[in-house]
Image (cartoon, rainbow, N blue to C red; front, top):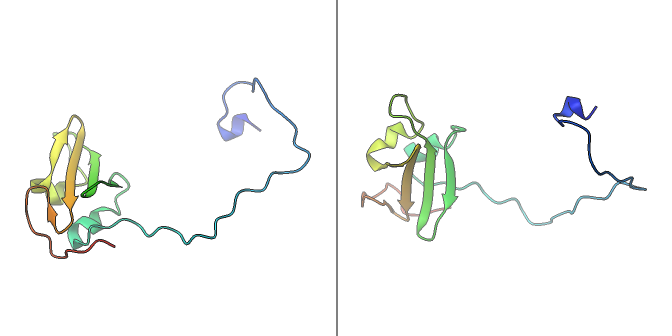
Length: 108
């Protein structure tokens, strides 16, 4: 059964619980997804290759980049830079890092 779930080899340690331990429950509402407020950029977030992270000044969008292949942030390529094999777009509140003003100035 362990092999079917992806476990390689035999476990070295294990224990027997007398009863299953309950998972911690949180009453906090789920965090809303991060969005830029820009229609084009927010549409790109539906691509599983695009990752979004909060920064001190806004948001960082990134995806894998290969100069010989299409990449997920291509519709916003003029706002991107590359870091190795990663395309990066820094989005600040109301403007991209390049200084371009966005359509909407509020983050949700």
